[in-house]
Length: 119
Image (cartoon, rainbow, N blue to C red; front, side, top):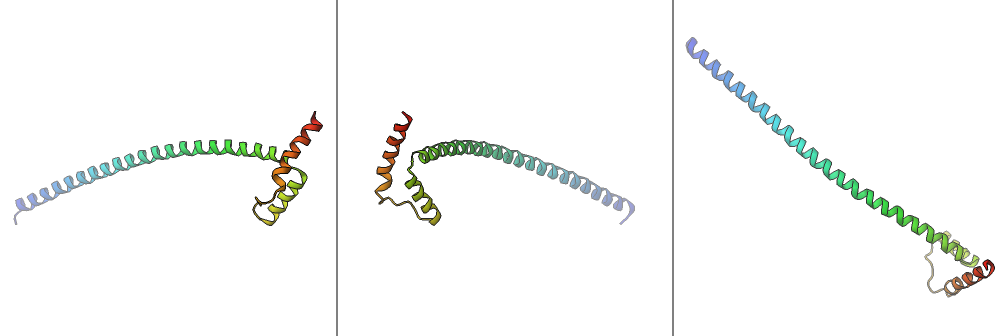
């Protein structure tokens, strides 16, 4: 191989190296663009999910407030016997008994008793 052949070989090698380098840069750019696209899609999905969760939290707060008001009302309408029975059930962990005839009929009585002294 003479000098001219070596020079051609080096030039070819440099060209391939430059085009390979440009190819690597192009690939890197494409990868970066793809990553940016994925990132923007993920951010959009996360924002949507955050909005859904905010709405669910708002609904749960409203429901909790409603249940607290209902609970307070029921406590004021319950007779001392019903409250004692309820506390006993809470302490033992037993479910409320539907067969007990006392609570439904007693629930109507405190309402009439409580309206009497108020009047």
